[in-house]
Amino acid sequence: MGREKKDTGNAGERIAASYLRKKGYRVVESNYRTIFGEIDIVARLAGIIVFVEVKTRTTSSLGPPYLSITKVKEKHMIKNALFYLKAHRLMNASWRIDIVSVKLDQALRVENIELIENAVEDDYI
Amino acid sequence: MIAKIYSSCVLGVDAYEVTAEVDIVGGLPHFNVVGLPDAAIKESRDRIKSAIKNSGYSFPTTKIIVNLAPADIRKEGASFDLPIALSILATENVIDFSQLNDYIFCGELSLDGKIKPIRGALPIAMAMKKMGKKIFILPKKNSKEAATVKGIAVYPVSTLNEVVDFLNKKLQLNQEEMNLEAIFKRNSKYKQDFNDVKGQEHVKRGLEVAAAGGHNVLLIGPPGSGKSMLAKRLPTILSEMTLEEGLETSAIHSIAGILPDDKVIIGTRPFRAPHHTISDAALLGGGTNPSPGEISLAHNGVLFMDELPEFKRNVLGVLRQPIEDGHITIARVANTFTYPAKFMLIAAMNPCLCGYFTDPKRECHCTPFQIQNYLSRVSGPLLDRIDIHLEVPRLKYEHLTDKRRGEQSCEIRKRVDMARNIQNKRLCGHGVLFNAHLESKELEKYCVLEKEAEELLKLAILELGISARAYDKILKVSRTIADLDGKDIIEAHHISEAISYRSLDRNLWG
Image 1 (tube, chains in turn cyan, blue):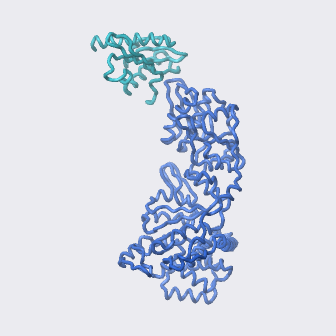
Image 2 (tube, each protein chain N blue to C red):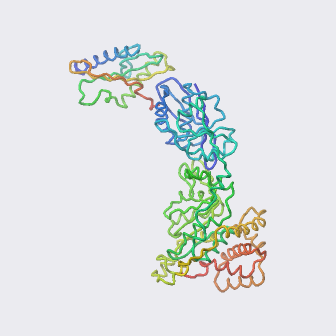
Image 3 (cartoon, rainbow over the protein chains, first blue to last red):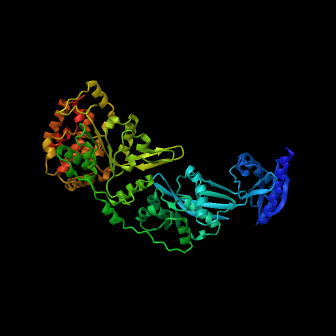
């Protein structure tokens, strides 16, 4: 991955975390590594564990950022989340997956930010 | 947390209690329906989600498991939307389900929370007493038919909000009330009457005999001779429908979803005229989730098959058994269903391909081979079950312009009723109702011929080439004619009339 892309991603995640805090989420972890990949943000909101996927883009030539989340990626998110829950012995807790879609301009300033609650539903089990 | 709401589904002609159980568990938001649901129920989750949201309630963002018990019966249709939605609302404490053990809920939800009509409301209402339920909450459009059942309270609803407010005692709903007898009486008038038909007196007489003895009829005649018009009026001379029969027939129509809104309960004998392109499944009933076919919709009424030879061979083949049994059993992998199918068959056909073979005015241009071929499309075994063959000639000019009206249906019906009463008295111990269903043993016992009649029958068999098969039919029909006449012993003129109703046996053509 090029330097630039990584910068975009990191910037997006920072912006998303502060956005979520403002919304009342308590950020517990960021960039949590699992054997399947990475969870961008793990937060808590009203007793529910919320796993957040942050998607950042600087151009809109490919459409809004959240469009790039495919069924395969959703499956990965669920796997990652289950790994976290298992590791923390939280298998019976209520949890959900949200997506924060961040659109930045070329100078990495926020143009638009959007939170999609309950973005992923479990159709796989 | 678990919530339970009761609903019902129809299998065959009977309704069963179904419990919609909902459990809310922790985990990723998820909505699943178990308990052998069909595709319409599987899709219900999206309807329910939107309906709950758009009615102003919150949809739980947790794992939701819906179970439709008993789990081994296949469930179909969208009528479980309402009970499932209510169970979900109960887990959210919007309503208190513990008070709802006497309730049955049925209804399809639309995305905006409106409640849409369902199928089979009448059989469900009829089965509620057996289930021990007292209050039936269902879509407004179906409430009238359900309200005809006594001993239950029926509340029509049109939105999900209305149901919730009613259950929380915030809203008063009017109980639907129907006077079954009054509606039945109002509906028991026919639009047609036999006096609409001009001329064709011998055909009318033949139909009267058929109606009196429950004989199946075949009308043969050129196009435009009034076969369909006569057939359509056959129900009007059958004895009046009893309330019980009316409810049976209405229940089948309710399951098929074709109970007319304005009528509520069917009070006239049904007349079903399927097109000749019909498939065997549509005629008998069928499908993976079987629904009643035309013969069951004609239950307690008349099934009219116009252009009999044009029907597919297998369709005519499968018709034979239900004619004998009065019901049809449909066996599928998942289940076996039995629908009642007691109907009178009236068939119509042309004498040949072009239709004018028996017409004195117009020339027929069919070859003998073509005629033979056309007639052979109707199989012998099916013809075996048709006792009366009537030739319907083209109408003469004098008849067409005749201003006098014929006999009214109600007068013919009086004679039919009388003949049927005689039969009922005679046959009550044999498990049959009509002369048409007499077995050969009973035939011998009840068809006593006077000397002259015996001679005539002998002559007919020897001279007219009447088969042994036709012999039984002639006896049965002559029995009915004698009943119409009020005679115990069959006389010669009864026999001769009966012989005249067997034109296909007399090798008249072909």
